[in-house]
Length: 145
Image (cartoon, rainbow, N blue to C red; front, side, top):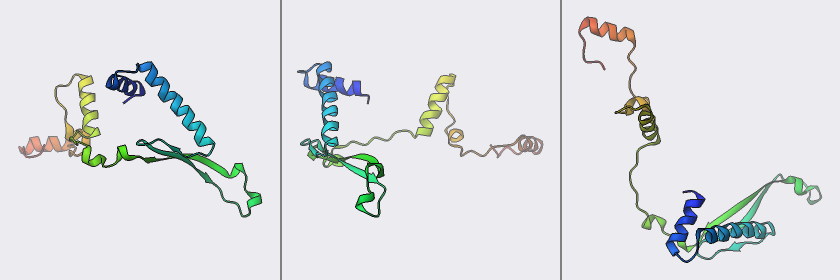
């Protein structure tokens, strides 16, 4: 779901705040969150969860040899809050086609085809060489694909 669609969902879900207001609050929240994290603070956001940063660095033999150049990454850590507990108990699972089948269907639709050969798309069918086809037609063998 795109950010715009999510903002629209929030605005229509509540009905009190416009899309512009919701978008502004979320953008301001993100800017403030980054600011607080860079100050080294853990930000507790109630039922949403907690955010803080961790650093990845190259080690040094002595404290005097360690500097900011040793730091290689600043990572945001998120621990989900109570709103995210027991998601499996609240989720509904529906079977969907594989990505390969979806891609083959999309390709067939774009080409105007009425059917899709899923076995060929998955690469599970045995290729028949022209020599095999010729030999089959001469022997009358119709058992091969």
